[in-house]
Length: 349
Image 1 (tube, rainbow, N blue to C red):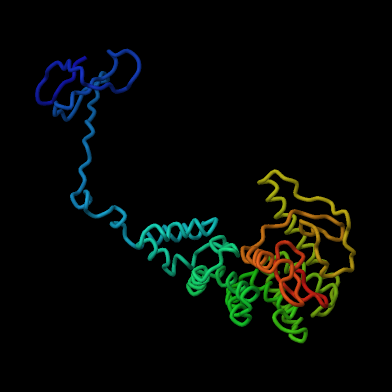
Image 2 (image 1 turned 90 degrees about the vertical axis):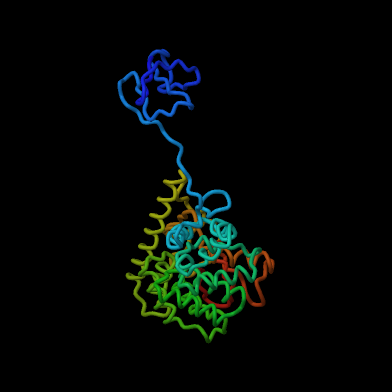
């Protein structure tokens, strides 16, 4: 086959040419001219003019020893990418590995906008890895307005570091921003008089906080509010309304279990061997799952605990053994981790 040069026509029999449209009979494939031929176009057997691909020229400023491609990216674009990364991080390492890559990424990664969007799993620090640098990181995120960081650091300070005032203040900051977990945690503190004596309990405040968390869809708050209404605990007794909240909590719990079981293909509920009595309140759970329609003795797999609760559990079981302190006992619920006094009717969070 002939390959025609635009400048002059000649038969090209050079064996150094390559084949395109590979496969089949060699007579049906086009021959490219050799590298020595400075042709701009080649004619194929289909009578189409195909331009030859030329090697891209690199600007001298990007050559060896010049400016790096990453350095040419504007800060706004890099910050936008880091915001997306921090908001979708599945563990602290996903974000920390970026910070230690280079000086520029470290500086932009600690931008207040990036820290404010960090996901809860970014703060899933293990108790054994707790350090001043981890404390500073959580503090920076909370100062940037990250609600999850406020709640997580508040729980750690209140329960683990025994800094009650600062911890409660951080949880209140998260609660003001309609953080359901923070609202419920403050309710537990009010119910139990955590960090103080029995006289520090404020049942009415606990019910009010619980109601706000329940309004935001917090399942434990819904159930707790239902028990309070049924028993007249901190609020005027209303058995029918309390029962309605309990049914709503069970329905939400079942919906969450069904969603998880559909994704994993596992069983979403199992009957309990020892049904709970209908008149009981704040019964300590000894099962692995969480109570579903507890009056009928059913259980569903426990939902994933918040990183703050994981930290509390690891902190007190790993550093203090079985006893979290004098007069304190860890909550029997596997996903709680709070150390509380158990002298009276306490809330099993």
